[in-house]
Length: 152
Image 1: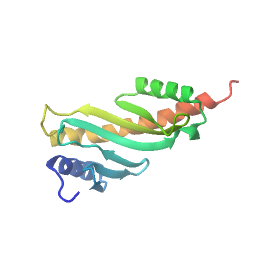
Image 2: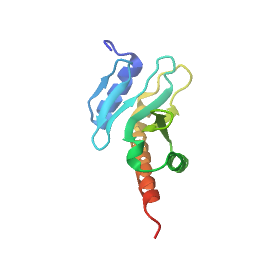
Image 3: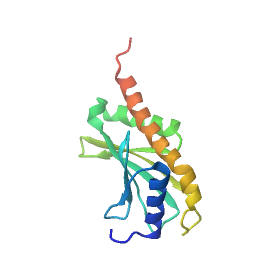
Image 4: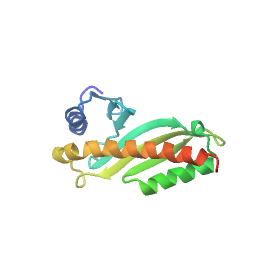
């Protein structure tokens, strides 16, 4: 992306100033950054829907690494999505018989229709968004490991 849009520039500034991390733009105009204890995350942005915030932690674990059946994994995902604030866990499908990778996101409306979000609001909530993603991802791993433990 050669010249960032005002929306992308706003998110880049907030990530860099509030999180203290280097943020760059990808080819789709999203704002990508590496969070120290998590890895790559990005704000998925759309200039046609500037009021919608989506923070994505993509492909943080391969489903088969968790050692659960697809049904068990979907149950854990549902439990975490219901228990944890703001988080949305999703499971990609590699093929008809194989579950793919798990991703986490936080999604919210942060401004009125067709309006850029207020910088102060983004600054006040960006760390909480990252925290919700971290908590949801860790909770998924914890729940999966507990489900795998043999009954005593």
